[in-house]
Length: 222
Image 1 (cartoon, helix red, strand yellow):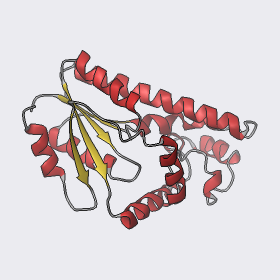
Image 2: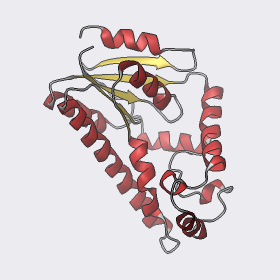
Image 3: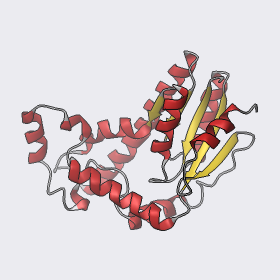
C-alpha cells in the first residue's frame, strides 16, 4: 500500500487509540499518539505553589507542545517514505489544516478515520472506566511509574489522594461524562468542520469490528 498520512479523529473514548493500534499492526506503520507526549509532560504541572489558573494555562501550553511533537515526528516518518497514523481528537479546524499541510509537503495523501460511539451508554462506560482503571492501577504518571523508588516517593509526597479524581493532576483526559460534555460544549460545534476533498471514513466502534472495512477504504485509489 502506498504511504499515506492517516489521521484518527473523534472524541475521547470512542476507540481511536485501540483502532489506530490495530491498523498500525496490520500495515506495519508507525503510530504516533499525541497523548504519549502529553503524559510525559504532565510532571511540569506539578507543584502545590501553583494556583489553579496557572495550572490551567500551563496545561493548555503543554497540550499545544504535545501536538507539535506528534506532528514533528509524523513528518519525519513521512520524509523517510513510511505511512503514518496519528492519533488525537483532531477537534479543531486548525489541527486538520496543519495535518493537511504536512501531507502536502511530503507528497502523500491524507485520510481521516473518524471514530464515533453511537451507543451512548457504552461510550459513557468506556470513558469513566478508563479513567478509573488508569488511576487505580497506577496513580503515578507513566514516566514516574518506571522510575526509582526515591523518585516515586518524591512524587507521591506532593500529590493528594488519587482516589479523589479532582486531585489527580497527571490524568489529563475527562474523568466523568459530565466533564466530557463540558469539553464538547467548549468546541461550540467547531469540531464538526468540513474536510473538503480529503477522504474520510466514519466508523461506529460500538457496532462491532471495523478494521477490515478501514483497510479496504485505505486501499482504494483516491
